[in-house]
Image (cartoon, rainbow, N blue to C red):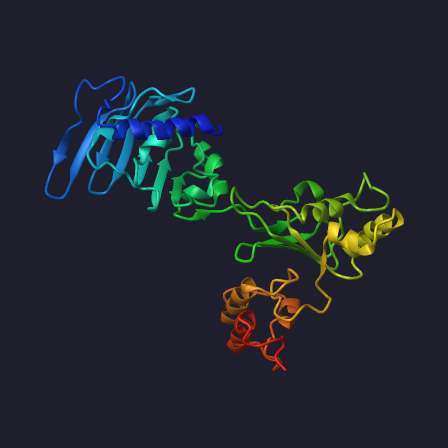
Length: 375
């Protein structure tokens, strides 16, 4: 799948200005105006051509643009420049919410996605359905950008279109009606189990097996990335063929990335394989003249079996509104938390976890109470 360049986006906005200009004309062809081909009290339908053997139909009542026929849909943008305007944009009030490309179409020219939905519909829920016969189409930023999360993709599992869009976690199989997501749980080849929680954005690695380095990822979709990774007490780290002074390259990589924007916060347990590797990293840096505080700051990790800060429900080392939100969800049962998190949730100090703890935490955040747990 080709990535759309900024030049293509520039062409897209240039086309908008061209269409809105009082002096604008339809480029390349304007031999005949687009007129309604069928009009009743309930429907108003338009149609035209969009390729040598491809046609389009627009149902104004359902805001659906349908592409039919065989072969290729023509190209509207070439080398970043708009060379043709689709006929459907001449329809007054055109604003498709649903775009369907039927079986028989094999390729879709560049620029189609720029123009298929029209202008002004960006905040509405939209759908793009593409037949399995399509094997070439410039989708631009649609699957990969959070700006397009209101576009849902429909198609056939295993098709070219599926391969391009399922990692958006917005692909629905038209045969079953089921949402196809990037897997969120599994077992590494070397035996450790993994599970990703989409609500808390936490990757938990458990069991007494080993992490397979080549299979490890914190990426669960184009826009879905883990923010935390918990390495279970019995989990074995990948064998380190390129050990640096006794440290583990896998753990070192995780800890080095932890402070970056896309890095994952690392959580581990005392007396675990990860703990042993972490202590070696610390000892090596201290031997080179670092202080232990400097090492831990450069390679941050949190021990889950240490006593957590009261109110720090997400275990990130501070107490803020995100902890209050997570506590409320945990109390309502909408998210699951581990035992260490539960020990941080008793904000009112009564030994029970309830909605009163959420209230107490909010009181602490607005300075109505001075400390947690409340004494």
